Length: 630
Image: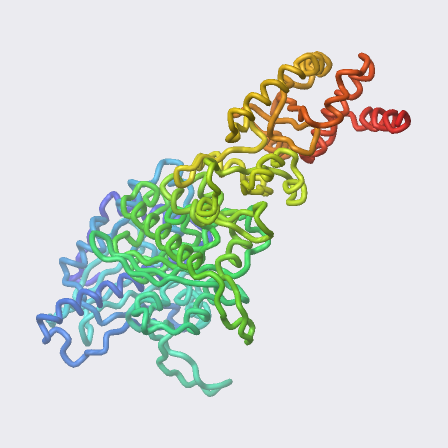
């Protein structure tokens, strides 16, 4: 230490951060380069802004840049910029205290348990102090733009630092890292390239490094720019070609196929946000189990994190893309994201932009497009729905704010034809007299189509939605209604179909006539059913089972049991078709025959909805005995 060297002690908060950094080993230490490049970019940004009114600041050095200098012999890696630089006071204030580093907020945001989990630091950044992740000592040499004085700052992260006059040819800052023995990999060209590409590829200023263009012993170093320097999402929409979008999507997602569609957006106002969101053409094999987001979070073109779950709801996990915020801090943590108002704004924008894109696709319908080099008519939305429709259903169930928009994007099979149908189309073609949206749930499309519960509905010309996805019933339960029309299950409660006075009188007469049979069957099946009654929902089948209007359907029970939930068995209502020949013969049977026929009708009703009888062998014996008598 010379006579002009000043020795200073770090602030207590800085020592706390340094203790975590220096004494901890973990797998994310490459973030040091991201942080130092970000600091260099900020310094250039400041100079560029000041130079708008003070042109003399740039002088003859007008090419703004960041340079990475690798010195194998000295074992040093230098991050150099020709930005605004620092005075002595600024150097002490910025590097010796925590006030401007952003790390104090990070430390305050971490709980005691999280401070033990040092991987958090590597994941969220610690600003300038991240240099000590890889360096035994750090030397900073800086000269303020417009000043003739240069100063150096040096520390080994042992509680203090030294400041002294220095020599530097021009404005800007050099951060010189004396690398630890186990960090010498960062002197390798490809290791540095990889980190820059991962974290800082879209920093707006060129990042240059000397590359060996020679071969063997013929070493020839040339400066080369190793980042793209221009983020695709920061360009104007008209300046990005479709092919550039396809190429970017493939590099971003590692998908072999082109994206189905994309949206390029910029939001300005209280918050500034840019982004690119892509819809894949094909779902991955693990889509249902996967819970990670496919959207990367950037802050001011600096990569912050993969799997940005806090800005993308789980039901949008199929979306791929990038979101770049101008408002979030670079050292943002997941805990900060969870409670930050900016995060909520970003999430709202991601959901809104995605839904708008899907709405545009849905309105597009079938169009002629080029597929695998050949033109063909395709419906991109139905392609999307076939791959990712289930996730939109999750959104209906979980996201109340998006529910109304999502409802219009849902597609179902129905009794109308073999295609997919939206709720708007269903409501638009409802015949006079139909007041509800009817649906039936089953394990397969053939079972749903053959369901006895929809016989009377079809006879009246009422379209019925055929729900075959395990989540479907929960989705319509969450919606409750659409466009003022309630969802009504064909297998729950009394169907309350529109009927004339004559129809009502005829039904009452049948109920009265069949009362002895229903009472007798109620006794015979007392252990299995809640009650037995005459129905108007059947036209061809003799009987069916229905749940209470607000109860759980039989299929919902099966789905929950299959998922390992303990669901108590519910007694359901057995409904009889008074006009069916089998039902009409019940009154003339003796007690033994009546008991067998009642059990057969009950088991037959189970089979019709896709459920096995609880005692298949007993069902087979009764059926065989009945056939023998016939």
